[in-house]
Length: 88
Image (cartoon, rainbow, N blue to C red; front, side, top):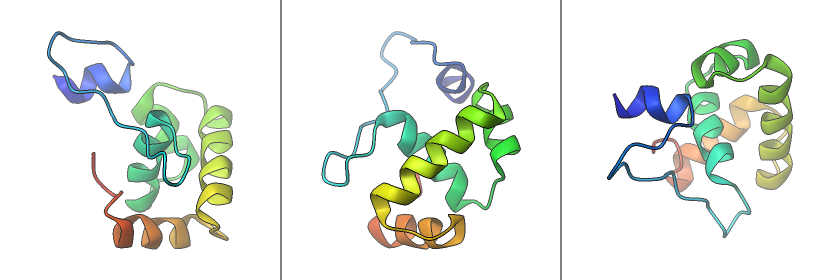
C-alpha cells in the first residue's frame, strides 16, 4: 500500500518520506526515479510506475545524470548501486 501511495504522491499517516540526498543534490522524487533507473526501466516505464508523464520522467532522469556526472542510465544505475541509492 505504501508503494502505491508513494507512486501517486499521497501521504499516508506514519509513512516514511523518501529522503533527499543533499550530498549529491538529489530530491526525494529524483531518488525515486533513480531507483527505477538502476533497475533498467525506461522513461515510459518510470512514468507509468510513478504516475507521471514520460516527458517528466525524462526531465528527472536528465537532472539525475547531470547531478551524478553519468553519461547514461546504465552508468547512473551503477553509481546508484555503488552509493547505496538503488533502493528506498
